[in-house]
Length: 399
Length: 171
Image (cartoon, rainbow over all chains, first blue to last red; front, side, top):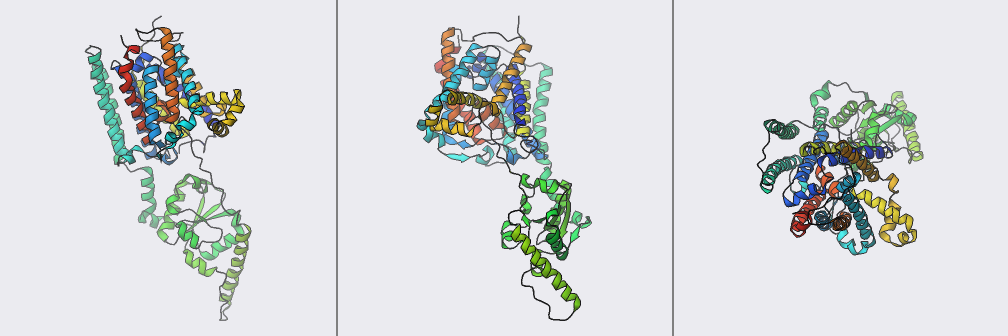
């Protein structure tokens, strides 16, 4: 599941990806004509809308692609870098950039493209932008207030507009196609031409538009991969049919006391419940957080056996199915709830009064394990926690 | 030598979109450009004037939190941009030293305006935390509110000022 960096590829390797991405980026920009300043500023005088066409097509395709990958479970959308919103800095910075655009005829990416094919004005623009960056750095105290004002964090536009991601995607895609049509009309008018598309082109464009909407509709009518898994693991019928590996409190306590290094005891209840009481050596992975990237390894490793417990049977069974679905680990569920375990293995269990040999044996067994577990918990307080895969904050953007 | 026509804008845009999508899938982040200029420019200052860097809070913080251009993701991406653009230029026979300008102005004015425009864009991209690539394009793909309002501000302002600079570009 993506993003592959840093979980599958190292951060160093991502530099290689950067180079490859850049080659594609530069190639596409140059092919589109973005190395020509006249073509770029055409946007502002109405004679050439290439910038809008390329820009919107790229943005909409990538956006639909992101939604599609996320929908089918290939991309963890929560890990993707989203540019933070600093309202005033974005607006004022954007306005200054717009002025620079119409005076200099480039933006940073396109000026680099232009310089790459020998345009001296492109190189001059790159030089100018380095100066601009330096001026900002030197005069930072002057800009600081506006730079840091109104920090809204990484908010999404669909949240701001109060709609779902998918609705926004529909709206933006529709806007893009309307804009393509209108700019085509404007180009015709400004350039005094009567240019119409050939039949073949119309078919290609028509299929492109249809494809975009078909993909969006597909996303909206099919359940996402996460929804499907959630439905499957909570389905009572499947829960009934599955044969679970089960363990009771006595056997689990034995495992904890003697094989603690070979097992994970996993509490899937809420953090509050975990805090109030949990089994010795248990870690807490609340049911709703099962899918989080940091826990992924626990379910895919095959060195340690996982023992799940909760207070409701359906919850622990769902977790078990989920873990089975992910793959390789050996899984068990505790048939008792945490209360029962607590009663059986509390430090103040009483010696039975009667003289039944059986009861005395049980008492001895439980008492022994309780003491052992207590010693272990104390000794391994800092070691027993599983090594969390650190969720690295992905950095991005231009700053 | 006649150069080959530009690619159909929608096809080029679609390819660009796929590149962006691939980048997001692999690295979790979008494309960018101005950040690379920043990395090179500020690292150069740190190299040339270490005392000055130590005394300027912004430069100091930047050099402490960044590993230098050769470990910077965007710098490598921009090296790729140069290669990709050059390759495309060679294919389309567009490579060659040239200054492109409007019919009413001469070369030196064009270079002057290019530097001035670059300066403003560089400055604005720092304030706005990203340029057309990093903020606007990549922001649109991940539906960032900040990215999209930056985009609107860039293009809105360019349209607003276009009239005053028409002599730079039009007949």
